[in-house]
Length: 318
Image (cartoon, rainbow, N blue to C red; front, side):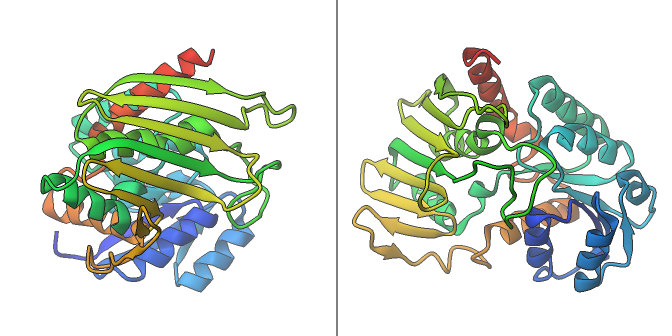
């Protein structure tokens, strides 16, 4: 495919805007349709980014013959069904994390991907952040082996707000949304499947109906372990911080930035063509479409992560 890839983007919230900002830097790609629940707000975003077609219904965009691919930044509960609808309409799809919050729905996404042969990719951004890519290259070169990953995913979210501080129409979830990043990244970086997983959670919030604190332990087949702490109660620096403890060094990844164990910054600016993990994720999606190949972070590659999340949900009494 040498022509411009025409994209519909569903979800004009905080994460949809991150994708729009990333796509601006990618040649040969044009966002031609924007879908979101609030038409006035969607039109405002569309005007800013020069997007001609605006709708509140994904089906309207899927009916456009010029649309080649769809990026879904919609509420978690819609991800699997919308991804399937996109592929059944003949469109390649990238769905933001998580692919599903019910395992059998994720399995159905993969089934439809195999039937259609279209690109179906999931937004496991940590695979693409320059910081984690740098560590991955060390591992594949045989220069570093993970002994333990120590991960903290911390927010202060006593009310249901998005990353822009706006009220949200859906409830975030520590296990299916936030733990998905680490569960997938741990197996990916180790190059070894997860063979043991344990979880405990704190009290259920009286109005949000979710656990606000969670602790997860993982073990890979190669012996590496991962300790993951998650909280919506933490009143401090927000985000996810990864400590890689290995046989030849210690590295701390904070999104796209990387430090050694002594907090000395490591230059990762030459790792890839951008320092923006979302942009790099989108570049992989479009490259896979052009080259007719499976992308990194395909539905098939990340399904084992959701199998582990399902096991953990069973443990927690889900």
